[in-house]
Image (cartoon, rainbow over all chains, first blue to last red):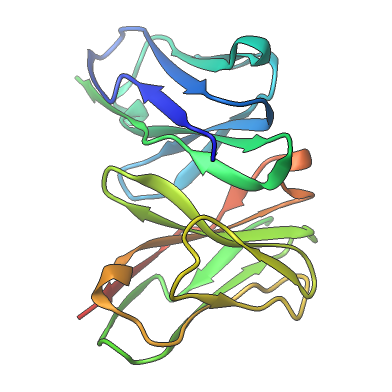
Length: 110
Length: 114
C-alpha cells in the first residue's frame, strides 16, 4: 500500500510561534485531508485539500500533488492547538481505502 | 445537526464475548468505514462500505465483521474478541468515499478486552 510519512513526529512550541507540519506520500492520491485529534480523542476536520492551497483563520494548507507532499501551517499558535495532527490520503486506483500518517504530536506551551 | 454517532463510547469486555459497536450517520452518505487507532500506528482501516450491501476489507480486517443493511448504519462486530483488539475505534462517513469529499468521524469507542 501507499506510505504516508509525517514530520516532525513531535513538536513543542511556545504560544504565539508558527509551525509547519509536513505529510509525504508515496503514490498519486485522489483525496488528502488534515485532521486534528484533540486531547479528548476527537478527530476534527481541518482541510480537504487534494491539491492547491486553502486557508482557515490561523491555519492554512498546501498540497503539491505532483511532488507528493502536503504542508499544514499553524500561525500564532495557541494552547488549544495542542494535540495530534494527522494527514490521510486515498489513492487514485483504490480511492475507497484511506491511509493515515502516524501523526505529529504538537504541544503548545503558555 | 450532521453527525456520526457511535455506541458504546467505552466498553470493557472479556475474551470471547461477542460484541457489536454501532455506527449511525444522518448525512445520507454513501460511504462508511471503520478504523482502529493504536499508539504509534495512526489510524488503520478495518472495513469500508460503498453502499448498502456493498462492503470490502481494509488493511486490518482479521477478527472483525461488518454489515450494511441500511444506508445510515454500519455496525462493527467482534465475534470472539481477543486482547489484541483492545483499541480506540472510529467510524467515519463520506458522500462518496475517497473519490471526492471529506471523511467525517464519530467520537470514537474505546474498547478493552481482558
